[in-house]
Image (cartoon, rainbow, N blue to C red):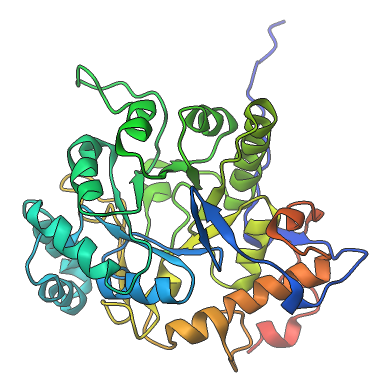
Length: 378
């Protein structure tokens, strides 16, 4: 009699399926340290703004820097294709839902203009903050040296999935060891969700790693490609790779959970799962300072053949200050994100984000519904 062989699926968990267990010691929130270090730079808050044209332009990057965070500009975005990128943004925001994707594809088909790189980086740095830019692996070898010469401080290499080894038609593809050696600024790479790929990327000498494939509100990679791992499990996996690499090398590579977080609770769960910081997109699109004024779309939405993002409307209902630091009257955790982090650390007895990594987490699929009948019925 033949016996069927089958692959057993391992469970993976997202933010709604887990909870953080309080600690046996508590700490005053104001005594917690939420700083985040990347390369030689230290930021006062562990929150990055994503490289979305709907969120980060030079003005927003400067505002984020003044508040102790970091915003990333998309080197392949509208800021680097048009003299007046705001006109292109307005065309996208005013398009009907059925035509939005086609308009985004048309606008992103315009050629990249290398002369705009120095202009935009200079504008972002006028306030004295740290400037970061992002591009895909395919354009990194061409654009990274130009950005560094223009004064960029941090370079991000980002695609739906990024690995240290890549098979292509190129005779010699992007080699991260050489990139890190040649451009001499911290290199942040993403995105990944597995232990093996994460550890191999760290071994190339990169300064940080982005975690997450397809969780963002504007990303459709999970629907289009069927790939991805829920963010809590993905963060735990990459944190294990970071810790293993640290034990072997003595070099600590911070990891940043990128996407899928809707409120302070989700951010706290990402940090407890092992993240050193988080990257947010749609949350920042809600602020008065964001260039698209309450509309957002994914970095892959403009793909000419297979878009893996969509345009969404989140509205403008907050400011950058209220979103990050409050005060707030909202009870859903969508404002005062830094306050939520500090308070979570306090109830877990963690004075640093590194100590929050030691907090116990449990599988808890009823964490958002238990006892909430009146809230759910509203």
